[in-house]
Length: 246
Image (cartoon, rainbow, N blue to C red; front, side, top):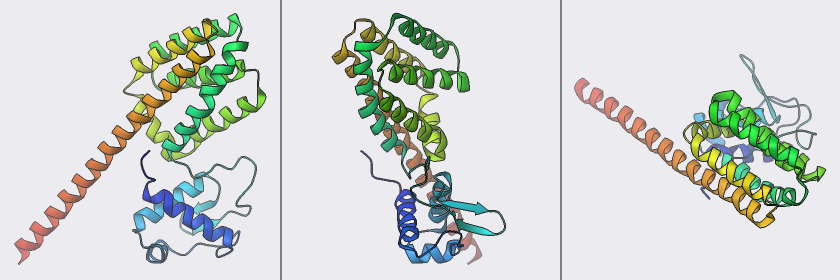
C-alpha cells in the first residue's frame, strides 16, 4: 500500500491541533504561510489539507475571510474521515467481500436478475449512469446479505467514495479506463452468486478490488511523474530566464 500523500498527513496534524484545543470551534486558523512554516510544508500542501478537512466537516473555508474550525468538530454523526482512495478501497475489499460471501447464502433469484440488469446498464453507459449502476450493484449485493449492519457500513464507504473530493477524483481517473474489465469482474461476482458459492463470490469480489487498487497505484505513480516533470520544466525555464538576464 502506497504511503499517504503529504496533504493527508498534514490534515491529520491540523485535526490533532483542533482536538488538543489549539484552535477551538468557531476560531479562525492562522494563514497558510504561518501554518506552512509551523508544519514545515508548502502553502499548497496546507491548502490541500484544508480542503480535505472541509470535505470532512472539520473546517469551513470562507472566501475573503479565512478558514474556520467548525462549531461541532469531531465525532458528529455523518462526519467523514480524512481518508485516501487507497484506504477507502482497502476497507471496501475487506467489508464488501465478506458481505458478498454472506449474500451467496441469502440472495434471491429476483435480486440476481436485478444485478444482471445493472451490469447491462454499466456495459452500455458511461459517466454518471454507469457510476450510478455500479453503486446500485454493490449496494444490492450488500442488501442481499440480509445484514443491516453490513448494509450501513457499505453505504458509509460509498459516501466516502463520492463525498471526499480526492477519493472521488481518484476513482474517476481509474474507472474511466477500465469499463470492460470492471464489467467482466461484476459478471464473475454474479456467476458465483448464482451458484450460491460463498467462497467463489468472496474471491471474485476480492479480485475486483485488488485489481482496482493496482490500477490506482499505477495512476498515482503516473500523476506523480507528471507533477515532477512539470516542476522540472518550470525550474528549467526560470533558470534559463535568469541566465539570459545575466
